[in-house]
Each structure stands twice: as structure tokens, then as C-alpha cells.
Amino acid sequence: MKHLTVLAIESSCDETAASVYSTQNGILSNIIYSQIELHKNFGGVVPEIASRSHLEKIKPIVAQALKEASVTLNHIDVIAITNRPGLPGSLLVGLNFAKGLAYASNKKLIGVNHLEGHVFSACIENTVPFPFLCLTASGGHTSLYKVTAYGEFTELATTKDDAAGEAFDKIAKLMQLGYPGGPLIEKLAASVDFVDAFNYPRLKDSSGDFSFSGLKTAILYDLVKKGAYDLATKTFFADQDQELKALVSSSMLVCVADIFEQKITRVLNEHHDIKALTFVGGVACNKYIRQRLQTLAHKRYKDFFTPAAQFCTDNAAMIAFVGHYKAQQNLWSDWTLDIY
Ligand code: KG4
Ligand code: ZN
View 1 (cartoon, rainbow, N blue to C red):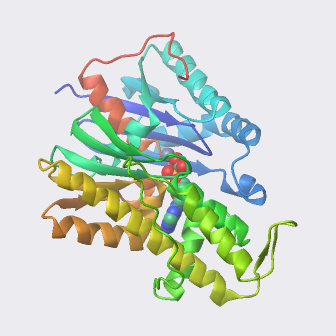
View 2 (view 1 turned 60 degrees about the vertical axis):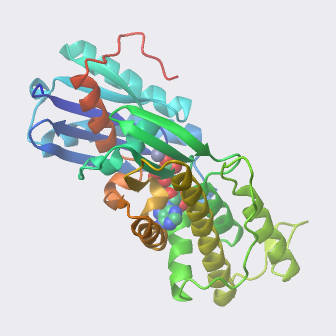
């Protein structure tokens, strides 16, 4: 293996992130600037605000990543950049910065798929045996992949509508909890011990894909039935009712965990060669779902891995990790690299 030092930049959504990875020592720095405060009042990410903020932050964040890694640009061999998928305006800021930096300092460039970053994020600090099954669940994506080698993975199932994190965010917005919804829903659910009070429907889907918009609609209509929500005026009446908010949160969380468990079980029954299960993406910060999936994996005699929280939500360390193995395979990008 060649000894390489990789600088990675990630700007696909609402985090400006940079990381340095070296062959000998792994992750040397992992700097993240989160724009959450800028988007909070809108209940979701506003693309125009996101790209403007990336423009402001990208230079200082990259400088900080180099500094914390105790390296200068001279030590860097490769610049890895997320070039898909994501918000076009946000991706362009990162890509053009990375291209300019690589061109001016005579470095190699590698475009990295953000989803590939998530898929291998559990491998940053663990030796995960191949083939493994990876559940990626974030605000933008929910998919199950079979991973056979570094850079080789096949999608076995994906969401037909909303992503799991998006469903948490939308229900949190409906109950005026705040943004992002996942951590707030988990906290409320813990306060009632993860009880499944309302038993929302677990829709059977013969295609094997995920679907979360049915759950979202079921919760909405249940709240209408309970007199807590008015559809015509889009008003939530139960702001002061902590118990109702906790029971909705808890029932929703249990339902999402059940849906994950059901799909994973189905895939494990069909793919007997799978050795391990990984759970990655922002939703993998959820301790309740982690516990449920770990129990399932161990019951099926599979290893279970989930990244540290800093590698679950969007970060550049996972982009550096992918950039590093691509560089080892000489999979360089050229100056025509675009955002799709
Ligand atoms: O990976 P990520 O930072 O960004 C995307 O690529 O989307 O994931 C953010 C998502 C949000 O939808 C957020 O609500 C969810 O991850 N999330 C959680 C938790 N922490 C973050 N969902 C459930 N439980 C959590 N503790
Ligand atoms: Zn992501």
C-alpha cells in the first residue's frame, strides 16, 4: 500500500466539513461546521442559505482541518471532494473550491459519492468483514446495501418516498418540537420508556422497499382524530400536552425500528453469506434503534457495527476514507469532474 495523506471536503447539504486522513494513522482531523442554527426557523434546509454559508466557511474549515492534523498543504497527496448527490448549489461550492485548490497546488483530485461515504463510515474505526449489510438512514436517504469490497456495493432496498430522518423531522415539525426532529423525538420517547402506545400501522410492502410517508399520514390523521390537529388551518393544539407528544414520538420510533427490523430480517433470510450488519447515517445516532438492531444482528450470529456519532451525521472523515481507498486503486478524477 502507498503511504498517502488525503484532504477531504464535504459540502453536499448543511454541513461544511473537512478532514485529513493518512495511511499510517487514519483520521488526523475531522472538522464540521453545522448550519443548523441558520435553518432552524424554517423547519428544514433552505438551499440558497446553505450555499452562501458554505462559501463563507469553506476556507476557514479547510485551514482548521490542516492545522488540527498538524500538516500543511505540502503534505497532502490527494484532495477528495463530495460531488454527488446533494443540493446543487452546495455541491458546487465544495467542488469548485477543491478543484481550485488541487489545480493551484498540483494535487490529484478524487470525486466521492456522499452515499459511498456513509456506506463505509463504519469501517473508519472498525474492521468490518465482507460481505456485510449496511442500513444507511439519514435525512435524505434510507437504503439497504450489500457491501462486498471497498468501493463495491449493491442497493437491495431503498425508500419509495420519505427518508426515515425526514419522517422524524416532519412529525417533529407538525408537533412544533424543533429541528432536526430525530434527537428531539428520541428524547421524548425515552421519557415514556419507548412504549408503543398507538400501534401505528406497519404497512406491508411486497416490493421489499421502505416507505415512511404512510406512517407520517397515519400519525397526522390519528392526531386529527384525537382533536390535537386541525387540517384546514394546519394548527397543532397540543403544544402543552407533553404526554401526548411523548407517546406519539415513542410510538413512531418503535414503528420505525420495527420497519427496519422487518426488512433486515427479510434480506438476511435471502443472503446467507452476510457476515455483519452496519447502521450508518444521521438516524444511526439513535440509541434505541441501535440497540434494537444490535440485538437482531446478534440473534442471527452477525457482528454489528455503528460509527461514532461524529461519523454518523454528515462529515468529511468518511469522504477522506473513501478517497483514500480510491487513491490506492488509482481511481483519479480529472478537471471535467462535475456535480453529477
Ligand atoms: O446524515 P445526516 O446528518 O444528514 C443527511 O445526509 O441527511 O442526517 C440528519 C438526519 C436528520 O433527519 C435527523 O433528524 C436525523 O438524522 N437524526 C436522528 C437522530 N439524530 C439525527 N434521527 C433519529 N434519532 C436521532 N437521535
Ligand atoms: Zn448524509
